[in-house]
Length: 513
Image (cartoon, rainbow, N blue to C red; front, top):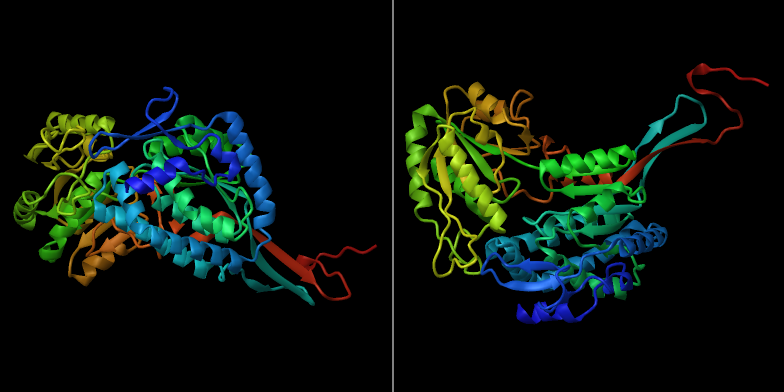
């Protein structure tokens, strides 16, 4: 991986190609304090320092992207899909290196880092097929010798704001579909994980150059909140796709709405699993554990709440405690370890605060959480996953903490369980474990889960790219990835063609001169 990192530090990257070279590169650690420092939560080491985008350069990137759009939109969609296919092949070639970098910069397990790159490959494959299926409808007109149909056109410049927890996959969900639809993209990655973004740009650079892709089709800007605000406020940005906290999403929505722009939001989740007496606990328990501790509890789809029927509550609780006792915590690059670090010290502080509120609000910790110290834990970002029994309406249970804390709740009837499941502000992912068909169907019915994702006999995390991903309520309502999510990146146009010799009007209106 060191050779891979060195390549990123020494070669320019397409970011509107030459437009981005001057201000976006990794540097030695002795430059000015204005640079973005990328520290690895794995060992606390400074990986590189990155130049943040200044406003003048941001404007250059936007204008370069706008110019590129005029050319890119004229490229036939299947040809755009072919270029995305080649990108997927590049990601296949660099899967190990990029997956390792994701793991090292973000802290997720190596398997999850490789899985994230596989998601990028999968969405490239999906987008290739989608490039030949940007369908509209043909409709019958009420007027003689008329034909009606609808078609879809690209929007223009798409701004993509991504979070640290999936530093590359969520960008690819947006970018690959946006590209085959004929848009150009400006990516603002999390300031906590800039190197993975630089790596993606570097990996696709050769594909873009070999295919004479217009400068500006794939752009990159860096920085903190200010850079995201530029995208949100800018009327030149047709769509802002933002992934992050609910607080951030509300700010983006208000800003973009003020200029009547479009936005696509993927925000917080407070995901629950219901376990009924008809559950197969041999598959339920591993799913619960992975959902709760995978990525150290830093997925938007992480399992936060476990709602257990009272007759099996003690059995499930005991199985979980035993399973947690087998977890191995440590360097995520060691594939024997299940749990890596939190992203930074701020995340550790949020974890500790949540555990304090658990006790303050009448909860009981079955497994105490703690910050781990000693050899291998020098970064100070490693914590022990915790399990807490909580009153159902506790304030902390309503809140999403990005950390491996699982709250256990009891229920009597399935109706009560579903009410608990839905009784939080967020609405991303949900699941039920049952072999009872009636219970499963009730959970999936109109009166069941109110989340954008509802699963039966699988956990809350680990969505496939073929289905539309997103949630309701404070999760934002956006949909990315599969199904017909491509429509978010296009504008709909209704067309009526008169091929006759007269001019009949709709609704029988008469207008004669």
